[in-house]
Length: 427
Image (cartoon, rainbow, N blue to C red; front, side, top):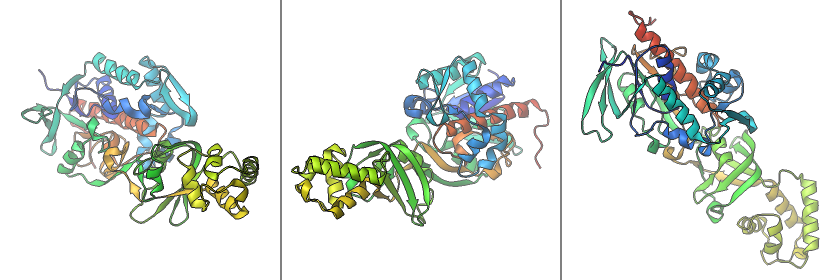
């Protein structure tokens, strides 16, 4: 069998897009994936629905990237969200736009996205090998091939090629294959790896109330996150979950991407339990409830206003005994209760481990990569795509948009590189 022009390492979103882009440009392509299935991480994105992209302009995507957003100028201008939507529609996947401009397959099934990519890989005759790349070979300073091992690393073989695209992801969700292999291979070739941290991740809290309310999901609440400098770093309405270790749920995952300085900052999550009611309206509601149930114990009466698991915590924080009759509650106690409904605070101590994160923050230093081509500035013929780059975004389809854009740039550029007898020019 002839050696391929391009070997793509990693069968996730960025890797599959890179392989498709290179093959569409006429390159012979082999995609090497360590799992026995491509797109494993795509199966679980968007709660299994696959938030493909965000229906917005490139500048809005860059604004959702808290660090190194400028690196993505060329890639996003070449592959904007509109292109991604048209791409999947052309592959036979109808899409829909939901709240926050989030784009999903109309079927709400991530498998439709994966199957469409797989069909396109097969149509373009991309060879898919199941194995693990253990190292990248170079001759005269440029890529010349890879060392491929089995999943168990018991034996392996060398595969020659003219270009390699590393798209192995970061360190989040290692069960899907993101174990940092590409990062360590890049480091061995002289690249710098910026501190790896979890992003879009649950948060730990020292507050024992979280464990007491484990399993409680709050919907349609407003979460405000403040730093120790009293700066609001995040505010949004949605759903969160109390767990045995702290906080989780969609609001918390989104908020975590804004909480990037736990080494120097402390953060507090303030929850507005009744965002639809201002303080005056809520106080009037409390007065009515207390009057209508004047002879009820507070732990029973408050069940009409708060979930069962939350009631004893609210009363404890307000300093109101659970067996106190409603008609005995003082104005000051009612005021404390009102303030808790509008601002229930939970301190957080840090993120959960990176293997529980959706996205890796940090990665390959972007100043060592050409932002137009995604090619290494250190090793000719080596390209990068996706999460292993030091760019990560907030939730809403932005991270997958980055994967598609960088994957396409790397794939097309690698194909152009191998077709040029002199290779690219490096300044």
